Image (cartoon, rainbow, N blue to C red; front, side, top):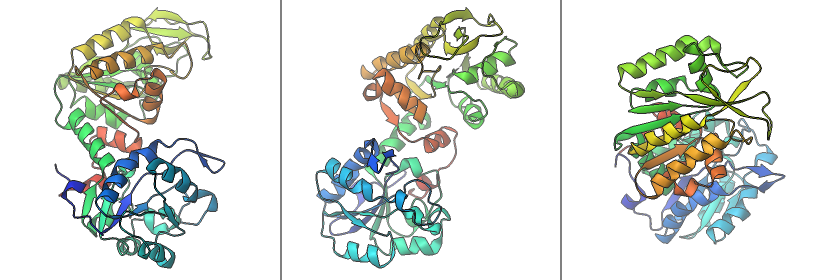
Length: 396
């Protein structure tokens, strides 16, 4: 592997500074989704089992370098202890006397959560002095927060240069899955990119058509490509000013022998509302008051055939407005078909991004995919071919 893992580390009695992602959903001071806490469990368990003192570094929200009581990590302590099945201590700062006293009191196997690193301006500034203060409290550094790895912050990047640095178990899973999907995949490789805006995924599309064998474009962004090809899109969301850009991407795909799949039929309605009257239309046959809100059945069937003829799938973005039935049908059917192939070992299926995870959860297939990343921005930037500072800092 190009990065060191905990398998390489001498952990007994060592102070392990572990960067985790505990930026979890909260409501009235209560954690409403413990997914990210559970994701950190394997790394914490491994460190504890091998006699390390586990010191957790994390951020919550955007306090912008100031102490904001409502953004404290203290409410994480109880739900984290429940997930781990062991007591979790808390220090009211991540550096300075309070942190030092709490760390000095640790015994091997103990777990301590430090206060929000973003309460210090030096965190987001990637400040050397602040990183030095963090490093003084540890013997080794573990990054288990892939979702924050696209940020060059003190606790995600600079700290890795000051102590022996290792990838945590969740980081290892993410990096291995992404390498299997884009780094050294089994071919043919099919990509699915959906969502509403071409403008937010220009770098992604431009990179993928040079890497993939096949690329399917869905969601609202497909409307821009259809418009660029001269098709009427009625009242649909469409970035008409990006028509030339869409045509450039189509040309680039052709130059790189990447087969592009655009919708061949669509589902339209006059209103984007639950239970709205929906109709299937051929491409270009859209009334001026109709909106394209989902991929049509022939489009989904063709996409499923493309999956069946692929070895690897990487998916980011839904095919339609999946949050509002009946416009969830295309995404649900495609997701369930991909999951079936992955479950039987016929397809390596990797997905990521907030809307994508929500769609796969709605389809009930998250556990059947080969890997589903909960990282948003970091997953996208990796797919775009960009170097992630937090990952690069872990390289051997």
